Length: 166
Image (tube, rainbow, N blue to C red):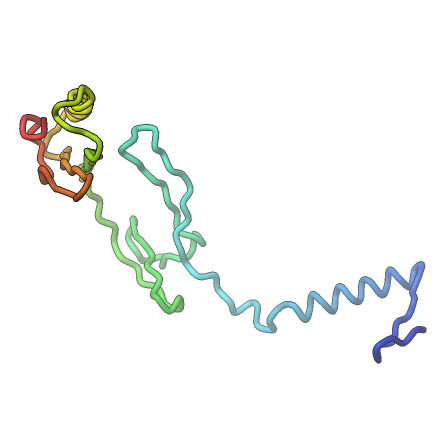
């Protein structure tokens, strides 16, 4: 036996070492778990299982409630579990599906180095026009035009009118 800093160390080898290691692991395991482990229930939550961006800018996500038994059996599917800010209670609400697939694009042009007299002004205007026309604007696809240089200016709020933008 050795004593260092008030602690006593014993060297154990062979079979005694295996028994001592087993007892130590059992003790650590027992001390590491709360006494009422069977009374604890996992908190409900949502787990993202898959994200599909193959049709960008449209993105879909598949989510699952975890653990699977977190939703009461009498709840009508589909449902969402909403956890309160305190993390203690949860509320079950019905899901509402919407098909709102609109997107909004802000076309922001840096005009700090441009002037109508320069050749590159026409190039920038042509590129912006081509971009706007490529979007096939409609009621659910709109573009806003913003320019910046010495100051920021909203040239056109969100619109689906291609002629106003170009």
